[in-house]
Image (tube, rainbow, N blue to C red; front, side):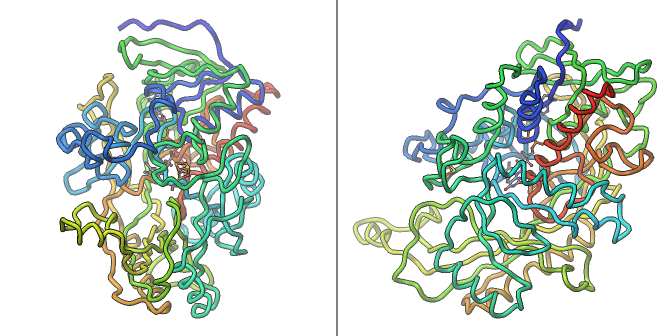
Length: 565
Ligand SMILES: Cc1cc2nc3c(=O)[nH]c(=O)nc-3n(C[C@H](O)[C@H](O)[C@H](O)COP(=O)(O)OP(=O)(O)OC[C@H]3O[C@@H](n4cnc5c(N)ncnc54)[C@H](O)[C@@H]3O)c2cc1C
Ligand code: SF4
């Protein structure tokens, strides 16, 4: 297939328009750069595609989903809680986007391929890292040391949070630094009871706070506050939660310097050995399958952790036969995801005269408390809990049995208050958890698929076990009854916090990217999505990806002005 060369040379080309690509597009265009965004998926129109206000009875399968189509086209995506009849259109078709793994090492790769990427369906939890995280590898002698510390990150967290709009409570905890918050959402009765109990019983070590979420509790930069309709993963016409479509891409568009090209599947990056520069990008048109090239003075890879690494692995030259910018041999190694799914749930007696109001689509958070003040003998690092207090009601299950008048009357009754804790733990960097190009399988556009090798290690399994113990302890301390442990067996990937495989580091011999997400080997190449991560912390990662992206854009534009790029 002959490649058509587009003659224009852009100041910057960004690959991907999800959380990080949208952020890079906004930063670079606002700083005066003519920027081309290449997005593999289709355009999204909020008016047409967002479906958060469509009730089940207007859906063809009444909200239960087209099970045949899901089994055929999305057998992996449907394992994600958000891939339902409304939102499955925002998740990839697994047949068109294959990847491979060993039978005994299942990996659930949950992806979105459209303008906005997974920023449409994400859960919006946003927590800063602390030096407990940035210094962890150095302290434990694992992986490589991060080339930055919290003092470097903090002003950029401020900068990003100012734009994104995050509601949350300040708690003054060193392991979970406070940010620039909009007013927090409110606790319900069960959450109040358990928060008080934790502060009485755990010496300030275990704290129940309101989830810090990228959802607006008041008007912010022209976006309306949340009206608590509930199913955010279906879109938000009032733009009350942060996504590329709701926030960054419109800002980039307003500069007049953005060219956004959907249906543009990046196949590889072209490298000019004489100049030691990225020279262009080879793209396959998503609809016609025709190949073409585009050119830019620098490239920002923001296609999501594993997709960016796949593009780099597929960009081979005589200097980089094992993938672009891979002189260290580290490209593809140290894949991480958070280990999730153990915890506990219990009935919280009292408050039967009170009912919840509205559909607050966020929950509570218990920040990491293991290996913070004192060292735990059973494992390294730690975990946090998400969760929520709620009153049981029929709508928690479609399968509530019954019929007739008594049944209808019973639907008006509320059940008891309950509260659940659901743990998310840190995953250690491990070079054996890695990706490479599959020698045989290709995607619908003829691009080699990834072969993923990942399994949980001893440390991750020890964290899971401890989650169930401490969750039950906290519920017990709050006087909960009928406490039941949650013990899920989730494969890596399903937490959808996949990261690593092109890590940042101080030494070009042991890392792919420097302290500003710039490839050690190729100065006009930046990778700012989750592939850059050197360790995983236990908190949801996307705000850290945004912080790194904004910081890298600032650095890149300054370097360009100095003539270094
Ligand atoms: C249900 C769900 C809940 C989540 N909850 C949270 C949460 O609470 N907190 C949190 O921090 N994170 C959460 N996440 C994870 C979060 O969505 C991701 O971390 C984040 O979207 C990553 O941003 P990104 O820009 O790297 O990738 P994405 O947002 O996935 O965007 C990547 C974009 O690149 C495009 N692309 C890929 N390959 C190519 C190619 N070859 N050429 C051109 N374009 C390409 C894709 O089409 C896509 O649009 C959740 C995710 C899901 C699905
Ligand atoms: S709950 Fe709030 S943020 Fe979520 S879709 Fe509804 S209005 Fe938007």
